[in-house]
Image 1: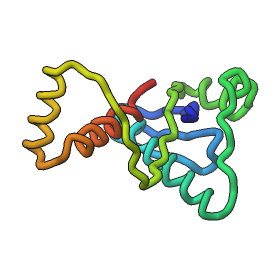
Image 2: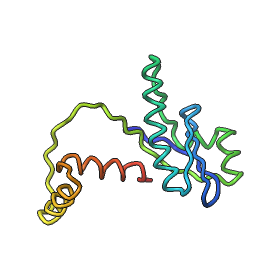
Image 3: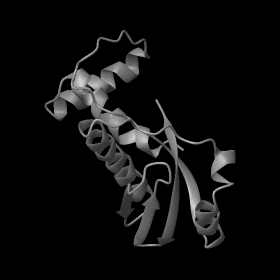
Image 4: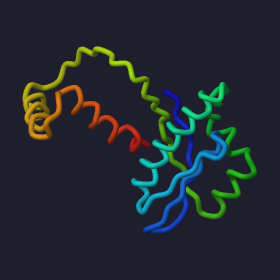
Length: 136
C-alpha cells in the first residue's frame, strides 16, 4: 500500500488538502480529520480515473524529494502541515483472512455487527475504512 504525503492548510471549519504527487487531487473538510478522510476518498477516485484512462498511478516521492520541491516548500512556509495518507483501492473481490483476536473483542464485534444488521466481515471492513485513512 502506497502512502502519499499531503499538504494541509486552512483554519478551523475550513481545511484544504493537496496531494502533490497526484496532480489535481484535492479535498476539503471542516476539521483536519474530515479533510484527511475526504482526501483518502479523493485519492481513490483519482486513482480509479487514472487507471480508467489507461495511465499509471505515480509512485509517491520520498519526503526528502518533496522537501526539494519549490511548490511544496512554499506551501510549508505559508503554514501548511504534512500528513501521510495511504492509497487504499477497493478491488471488489473478497479475500479470506484468518484473524486471531481476543475472544472478548470478538464477542463485542459480533454484538455490534448484529446491532447494525451487518455480518462480522462487513463490520470489520467498515471499521477499517473508517480508521485506515486517519492513520498518520
